[in-house]
Length: 143
Length: 403
Image (tube, rainbow over all chains, first blue to last red; front, side):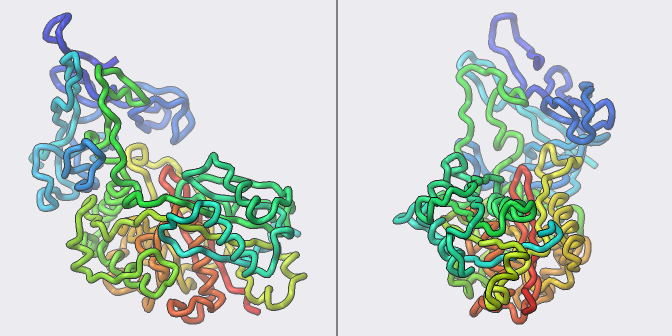
């Protein structure tokens, strides 16, 4: 499902690490949005958890927003580099997403509640065929 | 028996929380169960129902194995698992059977043996990366999301819950969260049943190892072993028992269980607030108790950041005023409403299945005036709260008999 951009037809590809991240010229997130009440979900739902309706459409979410809450994880799961900043971001125009705050030193002095951020992508892993998994995070943006 | 009649705690007991390499789960559950039966002055043969709460061995037939130690009387057994609300759910299972008229007396026990797992919910193994990327799971992920797309491990999730409160309200920060841990560790020094009984200064709390900012090591609850039990009795049956048993009986004025209703952010970050507020409000309404009436509260301080939010969720402080409330000492044992005089999960410990029963033990023991060094003077009414991520919340309001 997720778009893949390939240098050629047969060589290694880039693949988004989760299906709701769409790559391409301007990487962005998409959500399954309830057609009745507008509640949004990153995974598939049989019926809307907010209102019970069963029709969903796929909608693009904004790349900018503000930090609603964060933590700086020092004791991380095995294999995960630490410390890192985990945050919940309120996206402009609606939707809430959890990811890392990136391209900034993980120090409480550098993160403020309500801070403006924008989506950024990076390669997070490579498989044995040389395919690259692309992750997203949020980096500080000018207010 | 009308289902409007109250149900009573006739007997209750708990093991000391800690680590028991020399005992198994069933030994712990049997010790708490026999303690509760003896405390209530009743025998296993008088129980009409048994509910056993245990999370990690939820499919292990804990209730039936326990009967082999207590008495195989053929009564219905319910094995219950409901995240950190497992113990409270076991209690409610017995209560519902009594309310439904199917039982007059029943035993609810919560137990867990976690061993030395480190602090709650931290340091689990990450999903291993695939050799060749292939989309899997509900998010179509090709690599593990933990640590890449934020954290879903408990210290971080509850840190974020606390920082969200700081985002919404003034006067809340690292220091206010740390004061919660300072208080609960201090309280635990008076509780012989606590896993840890050591006081720390605020500076020691704030400068201990950071686990998930703002939660430091001393702001995270430990894992451990333990069990707690209650014997519940119908109002009708209690009236037939000797006066001393009636005097020591503790009234369950409200027993509420909620799950998390849909809220805007709860799809990406568990909402531990709405269901707690819903449960508390329902419990206050059912019991006719006002938050200002409470003489003590045992609430679910799995992390210090969580406790601060729950002051507000349980209406113990002014809306938005949890930071100010701890700054002025409101939840200390000599404060406005003592919170977690047992030491709380942070220091008393959190053997998951036992927790929701142990906090009923704690409140009931104070209401009976039997809490020894840690007794809250003249306690008449108290509240016990647990929450499990996912989410599930139990709130009980207890009152002393008045005899």
